Amino acid sequence: MRIGFGYDVHRFAENRELWLGGIKIPHHKGLDGHSDADVLIHAVCDALLGAAALGDIGHHFPDTDPDLIGIDSKILLTKTRDLLTASGYKIENIDSTIAAQAPKIASYIPDMRSILSELLGIGMDQVSVKATTTEKLGFEGREEGISAYAVVLLA
Ligand SMILES: [Zn+2]
Image: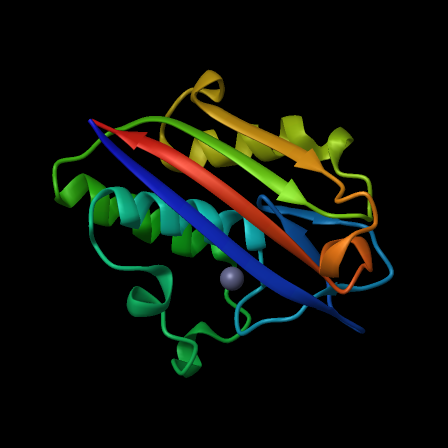
């Protein structure tokens, strides 16, 4: 058994779509980044890579790579899954938390779990996604950005 932890932050920007957990969420601003800035998927990728001691998402998918501009983070997750499979690992479970003051995330969580489990080839009962506000404290609370945390267990 190997445990992994991932953390990611993206700032809000105007004229960007908001992608979280593989889902486009209606909001008046989105997260900025080289890719689609799906902060939850990035944290999950980092946790998976960390558990296997395979470096981090920036190492495998550098933000200097022009081919990755605007890339769907679901593709990065699929590539991360393939790296783990090639190293002989299988995912036992994933737990994750999104910290966002706005928008409200709860109603999107079932779809996020469904998409993540499908991409990773595991059951929905192996993928947990939670959401919290930060009680208006910090950068998430001021709606300057969103952070995400993930832990995974590999076998
Ligand atoms: Zn990121």
